[in-house]
Each structure stands twice: as structure tokens, then as C-alpha cells.
Image (cartoon, rainbow, N blue to C red; front, side, top):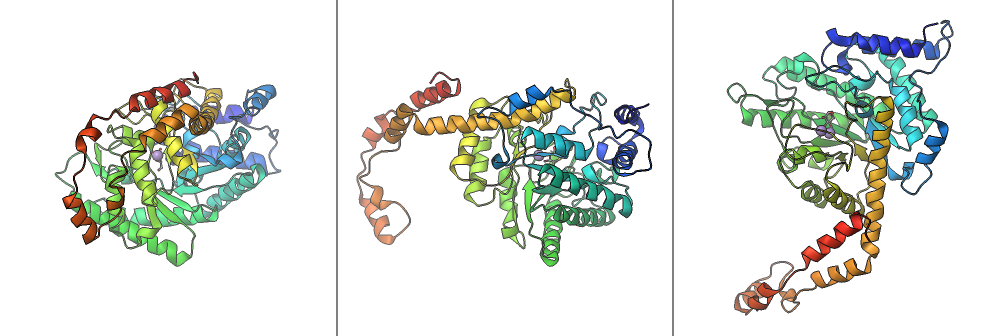
Length: 453
Ligand code: GLT
Ligand code: MN
Ligand code: MN
């Protein structure tokens, strides 16, 4: 008898005629239906065989979860359905991996120690699903969440796959497209609320241009504001406990995207009707694509109380968005990132917006997911070591000391302080000659990271 596993793989292999993303593909929907029929109906004669069962031997699974870096629910690790569900298609090549049903992803992530799973509307409910189909898919997904003890901390909308969004959604010149984008997002917000999400990500996938000839960039910002204000009012009126996290990206899939970096987004947030409801979802790769220091950007968002969510991954310098396994490229910066998040008490999800290399099969996907989480925990352990290393701490104490003579004249303006400061004779020569020992501290950090101390 043909197994369901075969069926799904076979169907996904004929997807070449579909739109370029899995979310809008008809066979994807058929797989969903087939999946649910087989799992939940008594009428079919198929054996109730679980699709995509892992080939990982049980003892290996145990090995993964038996040491101090093994992820647990308390770590608040989450993955998008689209991350481990990424099938490896790129502009030059077709899918290399089979389709995983959402409930299967929930099960696998839970087994690996993840806490949450995030989704775009169309990761779960296909673009053209009927209300009945939608309700069934959502019901089955909720059942899986409860069966495997998983939560949905964040939800978002796919405003980039369908051709209607080829010139953007909220910033499109066409009012009908802007109206459809708002309608789709309100429905997706309802879905997110139903699944318990309290963070709603807005990534302007195609909010940009190839040329500034046809789209006014000032109007684009105004349209973004109008849309986000509209959605904030909608969320308030529904009484949802939900905040928005805006995700900047400099380019890709458009030549240039509006509001391209953490800094641009932060400035924009304070022009909104309800800035308290809106924060950021910065992504490692997106800032590295333009050569920025991600840790500094995140620090600024944190300091402003605007780090609502974070997309962890990695990236090799400025180039296309690589979404590599967390910590697989920039060891030192990712250590400082984890240090920042842990020291400053970031309490939100540690979300991995990354995917396995195209070279991988299913096993490689789970290796990838496990790797993201373990690397975060290894960095966390290194942060603890940094805090307890006597040499590092002594050096830090010295570095942070400085000449306290004029400390009393700092810390905010008073006219008295201004007057005294203007008169003071500050010994700048001694200060200028002082070595700061950052070389030594940096080397000690490297030694710690490389396991030499
Ligand atoms: C897409 C994008 C990500 C966004 C996701 C949310 S979708 O994978 O590359 O950076 O976080 O829409
Ligand atoms: Mn990315
Ligand atoms: Mn992202």
C-alpha cells in the first residue's frame, strides 16, 4: 500500500507550476487536506502511518537532550514554521526537501526542546482555503500545540508571496492592494489571537522599490504609518493583548526596502498614533547585510524598551540574506549578543529565523534546529564564565575606574554644574596617555570562547 509519506513527497515534487512560495501552492493545500483526512477521519483505509517520521535513533535523541546545553522550555526558544519547513528552493534551484505538515513540525520542535512555534497566516492556512478548511486546520494545529506542550508567541502575515503584492502591500500605489493587505492582516491577527500570540511581526517583505521613478518614498512612509495606525486601532478595539514588532531589512526581495534598519524603524515608531504598542523585531542577518553592528542596534532598541522580539540567525558579511544557523559565522559578535540579552534581562522569545543549508535532508534540518539552540546555550554558559573569570573581572574593574575627580559634575544639566565645568582644569594629558587594556580583555574573551580558559 502506498504510504502517506510517499504521497506527500510525490505531491511536493510536482509543485513546479505553482507560485514561488509554499504558502500559496495548491499541492501544499492538498497535502494539508490529505494529512488531516488521514489523521482524523475514520473513513479512509490508509494505515494511520505518521508521515515524515524521523530516522534519528532514539538513543541519539536522548544524547541530544542529556547535557548542560540541551534546550529546555525555560530557554524560550522558538522557530517559525517557515524556518524548519524551508525546503531549500532558491532563485536557481528547486526544492530539495519534502513538505513537513505543521503538526509534524510542532511535534519535532517540541521533542528537540523548543518552547514556541511562530507562523505566517499561510504557513498554516493556505491562501485560498475556505472558512471550513481554515477552521479545521486551526483546530488540528491547536490540538497539536496542546498535545506537545508548545505555544505560539508570535504570528505574522504573508504579504510578499502572492503576485498581488509584487509592488508592496501597505505601500502599494494601488488602493485596492492596500485595502487587501489590511484585510489579510486583520484576518491573520485574528488567527494569531486565536492561537494565543501576543507579538505580531510586521516585515515589509516587498515594501520597497527597484526604481524611485514610480513610487514616492515620502508617500511610502505615510502609507506605512497609516496602515500600522489602522492595525493598532483594530487590535485595541478587539481587546487583543497584542503588540507589534516591526522587522527592518535593507534589501531583498526588492532592490531597496523602506525603513531599512533598526535605526530607521525606531525613528518611525515615535511618529505613530500608539507608539507604546509598537516595537522592533531586529534580525541578525538583516543588519549584517549592510555591515552594521547588530549588538549596538539591539542595545539601542533594548534601552528604548522596544525590543519586543528578536530574529536570531547568522550571516557572512554584506551579501544576500543567508539566514544561517545561529552562531555559525560570527562567534564573537553572537557571544556579545547573548551577553547583552542575558545581562539586560531580555525576557522575550529567543526566536530563530534561519534555515538549514540546501545540502541537507530532513535529518540535517533537525541537526540545524538543535544546533541553533545548543549554540545559544553554550554562549549563555560562556557569559557566566565571563562573569566569574577573576582575571577578566579584575581587568574590567580597572577599565571602568577612571579619574573620579570630576564625576560629580556629570549626570544631567544644572546651571551650577555648567559654570563649574567651564572653569575646571582637567588633566587631559594623563588621561590621553593611559592605555585602556582592551587588547588584553579582548584576547581573554577569545581565549574563553575558544575554551583555553
Ligand atoms: C521571511 C523573512 C524574515 C521574516 C519573516 C516574517 S518571513 O522569512 O526573511 O526575515 O522574519 O515575515
Ligand atoms: Mn533573514
Ligand atoms: Mn526575520
